[in-house]
Image 1: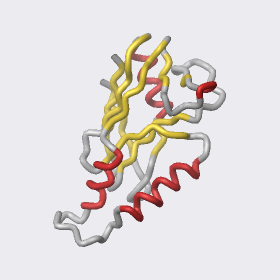
Image 2: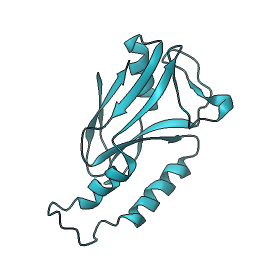
Image 3: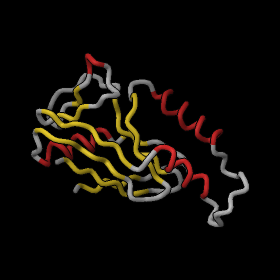
Length: 145
């Protein structure tokens, strides 16, 4: 397993980890299989979505803040209840196929569904892995099998 350490600059932030995932898959030597990106922290999440337009992820963050406001009278006493709920809604992992050493994602446009492994040429790919620590920096695991 490859560990990816993420540092955030805001309390809620989505970080594009696609290139790091690509490099991990390429280094693994896996040609056919799956790649799972997992966040072991209970206030972090992983998602796969469009990376071409940054407004998509900003819309997501703005909407999830509205759905789960920071101060909502939670019983959990640490002051980060909203972060736990946001992470539960998004989920701790994403698994995508690896084919011919490339990470592939169903969220991609059919004509652009290949995210080449490191060392290959990439024009644009709308499908992006996002690590979303909702309260702090975090470690994420990336496994290709």
